[in-house]
Image (tube, rainbow over all chains, first blue to last red; front, side, top):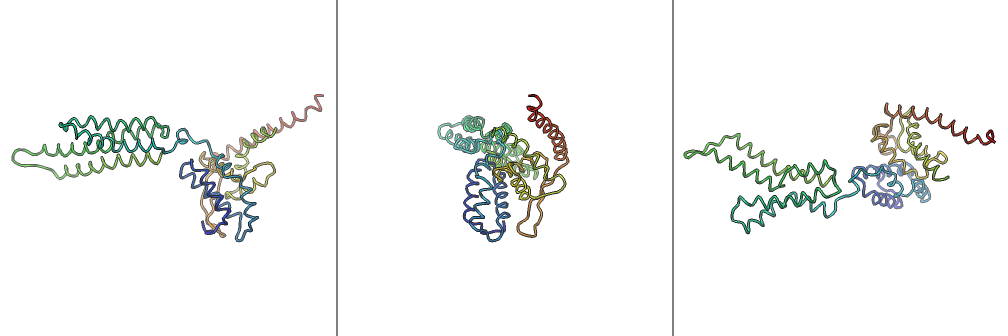
Length: 205
Length: 112
């Protein structure tokens, strides 16, 4: 906005509005506050008296009433990120890795580590599915991208490296340049996808 | 009495907003002030902004940002084709409704 100096009363009013609208989606909240700010700027003119400001704000009504006139939020949007949602995101991403690391202290057979890894991810999945903060579509995204979270990503990554070594015969290793491309893009994808999916979920809650 | 009136007002408010845009585009402040100055229409001018946002989401109005000669850019509202249809349909219904209500309210003299 071009008016750098709204009167203190108006600033306080906008802050109250911002607070009252804290449950709205970020974009909508910004837009509403911007609209009201533009309204005040327009109504006040260059050098308003305190009485002018009071009059404009009185006509606007209480910030809480303005927010109450917003459409009832769609189901799920009433709940925003809380401890459970953060825990869900954390466990979806890192649960598999953490549980596998803990498992590695007790289990010799590396191949069995997938069991605690899946268990760790399932904790995240359970938190995700039980949270009212996400829509069914969000939950599908969280569950399918990527099962196992970063552990699933790393498992996939090592899988491709291992299959890469299968090209090695007894006498010479044949690795095609295209295999490296697959490995690198694969690695980027399996790390990025769970991270992006977690960011998506964090923004949707 | 008062709750019934405020229900009625809430119901017709969006059409009053649409009607402001029937022949011309306007920016939010104009719309809000016009309705704010209409007697008995809105008690809190600010509550019209959520309404404008909803009308846009429902595709009844469109907005464009336009530079203004005096101050920051303004968001102008225009009626979409669908908005115009909705407004026309409501206007017809409303006139019929008004006639009926008027007749019924006046009927005590004739019915007595």
